[in-house]
Image (cartoon, rainbow, N blue to C red; front, side, top):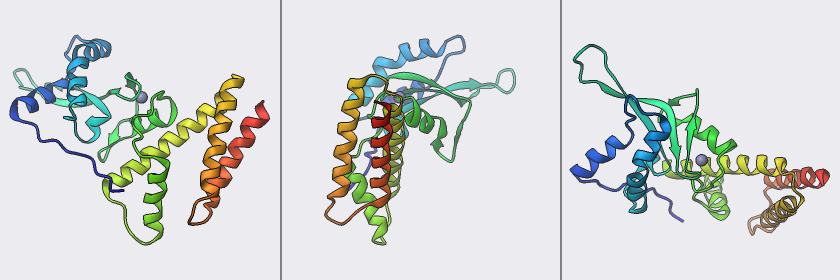
Length: 208
Ligand SMILES: [Zn+2]
């Protein structure tokens, strides 16, 4: 499969509006901000008008004024809205080199949605195999792989923490299914993935 993010071209009015979405007003709480922009944000999202990282989360901006009368400039703050779980995410770690580490942390630990991971297990293996056969992954593919791996970490944590027996049984079924998928891959075994899933099965079984 070919994986590329779509980058919609916004007209001038849309662009202005879009840029304003991330701005938290000076006396506004993060929840007020979220409430105020939510419908507009979802409208852009549902029409496929969000691009890049904005497709999955929006980072809040606050205006910073350096002197009196300064027109100000917007600075990103460590508050975001995640569209996978529709919740506000706060953090004390920032963003660097275009990657928001605090969103990575949120996705790998406490996001209860999974829309941020938009490739299937099959696609994931296909992309990983590209590397093994000497090809390279595109930037978008690399990001998709990263998000899939964050989702896996999150899922593993959830399975480990599941206390309720019904959930454990469901978890075991899912892991066993994945294990089978790895086991019967046409291009041979994937030892580390098999081992990981096997370990998981044990971890859950032992708790039961
Ligand atoms: Zn989330």
